[in-house]
Amino acid sequence: MLSTTFYKDKKDLEKVDVTPLSDNYCTDQYFYQILVFTTHRPNAGTNSKIHFIFAGKEDETPVRTFVDPHRKILQRGGTEGLIIAVPKTIELHTYLA
Image (cartoon, rainbow, N blue to C red):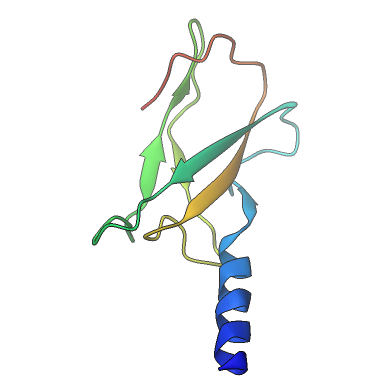
C-alpha cells in the first residue's frame, strides 16, 4: 500500500508545473501566467492542441498554442500553469479566445 501511495504522489507532482510556452521569445519583456482548470467529470480533458489569442483593449497576440513537450497537459482533473511572453504589455485584458 505504501508503494502505491508513493507512486501516486510522484505522479501528482508531475502534474503540478508551470510551463513556458514553446513559442515564447527570449527578447519578450512581459510575462503572464494563465491558469487552466479541468474538472473531474468524464471526458473533461483533451489530447487536442489548444490554440488561443490573448487580447486587450488595443493589442492582441498572434495565435499561440498550449503545449508542453515533456508531459501531457489539459488532462481530466488537472491544473495547468502556462507562462506566455509578449514583447509589450497587453493592458486591460478583455478576452482569451
